Length: 153
Image 1 (cartoon, one colour):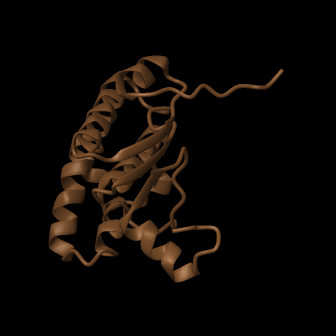
Image 2 (image 1 turned 45 degrees about the vertical axis):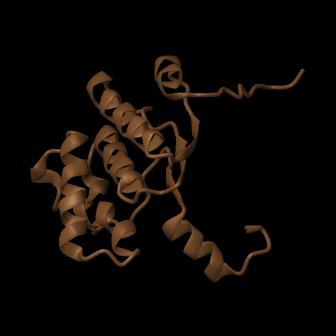
């Protein structure tokens, strides 16, 4: 599919089922709870709400987001907490393609390790992952191939 020329509905369909992403910053509707933010991509695929909530809870737990925060809006969270909600949202659907923009940028070592484990699991199930990693240790841990980018001289 040529995404540049594809009809908008086809692009939306591909985004729902094929391409997941974790951006560097979480951008969501301010009053939506963290649990709902994480659940939404899976809900959009037709999975029942209860199953979505259970999977979202497992991901938020793995990413060390305290349960007391799950029903609050992520806009009130610290940068690291927002990033972990964002990561859970990106990994809730088993997308065949994942785009990751600095997924560990705002995280401490413990939470970075949890993200690395999610990336390893996605790779093990066959997901194609394109990521930007400035953290050399994380990059070396998860990368199969490197394509360094830099200013051309």
